[in-house]
Image (cartoon, rainbow, N blue to C red; front, side):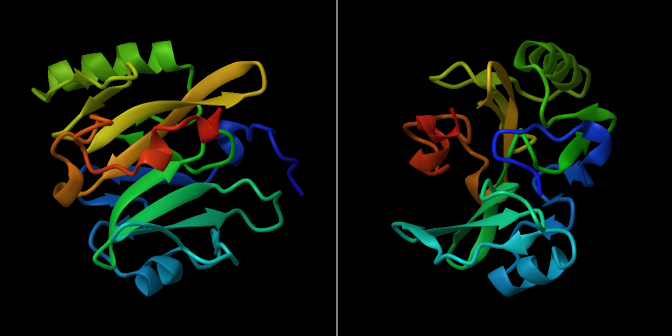
Length: 184
């Protein structure tokens, strides 16, 4: 069992690919909850707790088998369709955008590489109220999460329905739970 607060080494993480606005690993934006659970079968286990409600938005946590009660990722559904995936910096899958790893990184290093990537591909790079870099065109916000005495990247990915202003904590659709300090 992996203890709470322990950072999993990159080589030990599940390896996923980001297809912006389409999918994060086996999770496709727009899929139903049962389809999400099925796509993660054998990789991550759904929470045994009830789904949280944020108005019409539902969320659920998924865990690595035989780990502490720290989730590997949190998924959000709007109108019963997957619209957002937030990956835990400590124990979540490593998600790559082409060759750029996005999870569990030193935020300043990742920010510089993400800025280069967005510029090279003609995508927008915007900063939210909390200083998080992100791109609506990529449906990605690079949040941070505390891991003991260090801070690591905790990316939040959204589908097309939530891409507009995805990095905006006041006008975007990403639930307030992703902007508060529960990840610190």
